[in-house]
Length: 217
Image 1 (tube, rainbow, N blue to C red):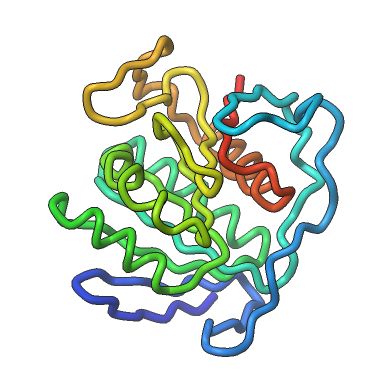
Image 2: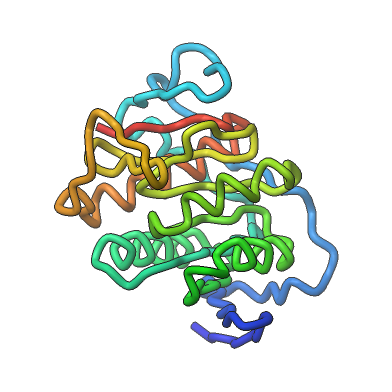
């Protein structure tokens, strides 16, 4: 697999194309589409905005991105939870032949700028890993409804229709000063949960179910 480095402002974006992918993001690009449909038990009825659903495990397995899907992984922090999420996204991108760029937000005071830098790459989806980004995501995303976001291992308090979250009990951080019933359990960030969150979250976005929280068991 070949890697290409692209400097974006003060950030570094790394093109990590899936094996066999040749998309350099410079040419025309079709609208993203899903291959396959959600299975029984993902949700019984179309969820209302900001709803939390608990899909049946594996009900998302049949949904895959069509060839050429472009994703930016926006990551902050170097703790074990973030590393677990980042590893899950990279593994998924390679398995699904997704064209992936990684933007690392190193400066906490520039997280808002980092999100804008990720959006400027014009991906089909921005996936965020790192609870440090939650407050900045809350600020930025409502003004950019044309960009889809997937928040892993956390959520925002009042998501707009373009922000979907995929998490589980123990991974429900909602921003500074906000608490949730399940609390924050670093030990809950397992590779299996992170992998399921990526696949369930992307499947939901591709299927048009956005602006919700997908709470895995």
